[in-house]
Image (cartoon, rainbow over all chains, first blue to last red; front, side, top):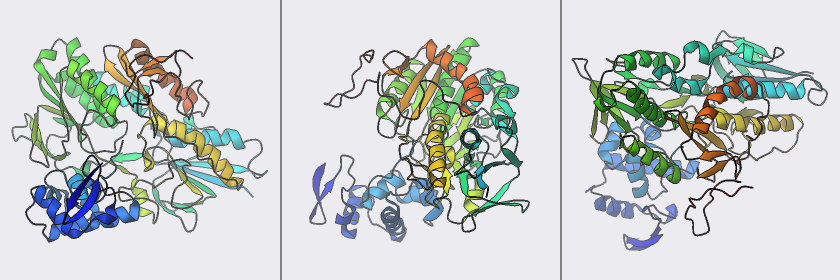
Length: 105
Length: 434
């Protein structure tokens, strides 16, 4: 676990860089994390995905996988990879301040 | 009044559940009420699915791995062969495609997973069953056998499109057997084998992943990780093609063996309140009662529980599920002891196999199963290979019949396992005899 500062506030991250407490996240932090990940500006479709992931997480206890995102977020899997090139589920989950979506076995 | 239990699906889970329930209720019923058991399936072909792996290599034939479903069920269990339209949870009723309805006291969903070929662009397009195959169904495995027989060299790519899939070790086993098969044919030096997986390693759990990755290396099988297949493209000359990843990476092939995405059965999607976005049934991972309604239970590949989609999981779940149906009908508290136990042989070629044994909490470890003296875990051995072969007999004659198999129970054994020491490192010595 590490502590880092986003948008002027201290937040705790796990070893893989995911938020320990999704409630400590703010939209301004997302902008900052996205920049560090090579996304200059978070556009409207980015926010559609981020908002959807947070909603799913708070409803279901885990963020959606890429496949479920593609089926239910209104953004196709192809577009998801264009928006979040380093792997949509992981990258978007990190920027959205939620834990890494549970992989299946 | 007769209590009616309707079981959807006559595969591993449905069959062993029906036979176990029948054995329990046949003399006394539930609370002295007779119990009627009905199994519904769309066809009468029960496939021994672990056998599909062997078909492409000519090691198993259609006739050896398929038997009539109804013959695996006790004769007092009614078998209905028809497509399922939907489950009406409000009316506790199953509606079949022909319009026939079955009201139930308890429903069991055991309809497994289906292969979602359409979700991968180009998978079943040009070259399907000519250059691009799957061995996850009997037709595909049979077509692949003919193609492998004619294959004289080139790039063989084995690809998992996305998790979850049935038997996550099967694609690795396919690679190992391909290595053996081409060695036997004397053309191994002309075949490049690549395993492309969406995972970040050879397998999901760290200890097993490392062991399997070194086996791949030893057998000179290339490992491509974090590969998310966006499309399968076959060249216009029909002589090969490439897998195209969403991240732009490409994996060229002369012959591709693809494990398609999996979904739950289609009727789940037509049944309001029953399934999730992928048509799997949200189910309590310890009791196997669904989230949909207290009188609806589910097991095996049909559920969303975080265990492998494997026959052994279904088998172990069955023990807890049957106990819970009995308790539910008796208005007793459910047993919440299913621990996610899974147990898989991993065929590694040349007459050898590994064995892994794990549950929700404990990853596959080294040591011995089921105790200090037993089959070696995560280590190649002839004994494990023989165990895998013998298991087919056990499957038809004991597992499906719902008989207990000595030494193999629902709870994962820890005796004989090299459990992590307090400093969390893994001991590599063998477990002490107990």
